Image 1 (cartoon, rainbow, N blue to C red):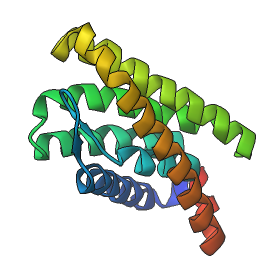
Image 2: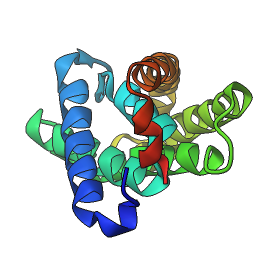
Image 3: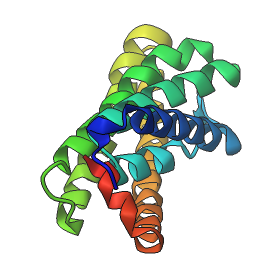
Length: 171
């Protein structure tokens, strides 16, 4: 496969596709919670962070979740989702930048779970719901992110096995 630097359109297409996949995963399953909804966005975010580079993970996670919030009737959450999930995708992919071992993926996943739980508590509590309500949402946010990490890992491993050239897109 050609070097990505000689094919900038490939990176743009990858970001667009992963953003769309993140929107779909966010909208496909929506279970209402106190002030938001439980969804599967983290499956797409972790898949992207485990499979591609930090830039792709950041952009697709931030834009995908914010767009889904706007589409689904929760536009007030779009800025919070943009920041929290963008940081989640970026942090997970950065931890995996040098090595993509199972141990590093577990460490990266724990970091991502902390970012989601803490980010929604801090930003959601500060800007939207108040801290008592944000505190109630922490278990659902942690569960959503943890489930996303497990299934993102499974999907990433399956895709890498089925299509080995995908490893070229990690740069």
